[in-house]
Structures are given as structure tokens and as C-alpha cells.
Length: 225
Image (cartoon, rainbow, N blue to C red; front, side, top):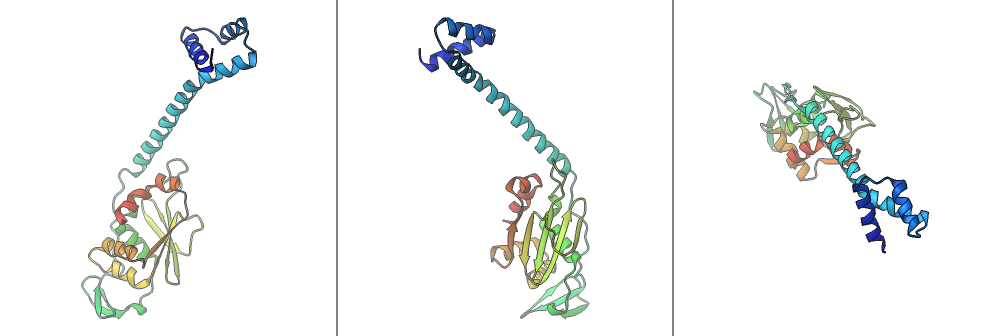
């Protein structure tokens, strides 16, 4: 009798509520070695183990998605003041307007601050990010604007500071002019997306795909494509 037939018979024995000692006794009566009988029994039990493992995996995945949804539920776009409101800027042959212009300055005169970073992240949808539902670590994004470095932690607020965070999930490398054009545009997200498309702004990924997924970066990526 070949292995497949023996495995089938062992499965039927399990269905008949026979114990393993009873099944082993049947093998011995037919002249099979104990080691071979153990091997056949293990193969017969394997699909059941796989089914249990698959069910366990599905439950864990469902819990992760449920926790992630509950953590992100209620997130909303923050009401942040545009740090360049009330100014207009000369950018080559064009003028970028940040609101009702009261003062006209050149881009070189403007100092990029953490408020710039918080505002642009809020406008491009970073407020949709959330903590990792398993580790509860907040999303962290680095920004390099020319020679300036910043990082932002995203929670119920977007807190930006100077410097780079070694635990950042990703990093945007951009330039001062594109950042200011985005801040002074009526549609900052579109300007930022255009800068990404043209390669003027680049993204470096530091975290694993699973980590990025768990924090909701997929939603941000889809909005910036």
C-alpha cells in the first residue's frame, strides 16, 4: 500500500475517533515499522495543523486591521495657520502669493522653520497616519530642505522639530523654492505632488513595508501618486 493510501486510511481512523496508540497498533499488526508509522501519522495530521495556523493568522490580521482602524478613526485634518500667510515672494519671473500680500520679499530672505514642515505635511494628508497598532510607535518623517534638516512626529498633532530622527520611517528630500511654492499655493498638495513627479522632491524609505503599512502610509502614498 503506498503512502497516499495509508495517509487516507489514517485520516479516516481519526474521523472514527481512534487514538494514536490504536492506529500504531494497526500498523504494527501489518508489519510496518514504528518510525514509518509515525511519519505517516504526522503527514495525516499536517493539514489540520495548517488549517489551525491559517485561522490563527487570519484572526491576528483582522485584529491588527481592527486596531489600526480604531486608532485612525476620528483623525481629521488639523487647522494649522499658514506660516507664510500675508507675504508674497518673487520666484524667478513669478510671484508666489501666501494670502493677502502685505510684504513682498525674496525667497532667500525666508528662514524655513518647523512650522513650515507641519503645515505642508498636514496639507498633503499626513494627518491620516496613525500609530503602529502593535508597538504603538508614532509615524516619524524626516525632511531635508537644502541644508536644513527637520523631523515630524504625527499623532493627534503634527509636531516638527529641527534635526533628523534616526527612527524615521521615511525622509523627503526637497528644496526651499518648491516648499515655499507649495505653502503659498491654493493647492499645496498638487504642488508637492508635482515636485515629486518631476524628481525635485525625492523620498527615502527607512522602515519595512509591514511597518509602513501598519502606520497607514499606504493611504498617504496613494494620495501623492
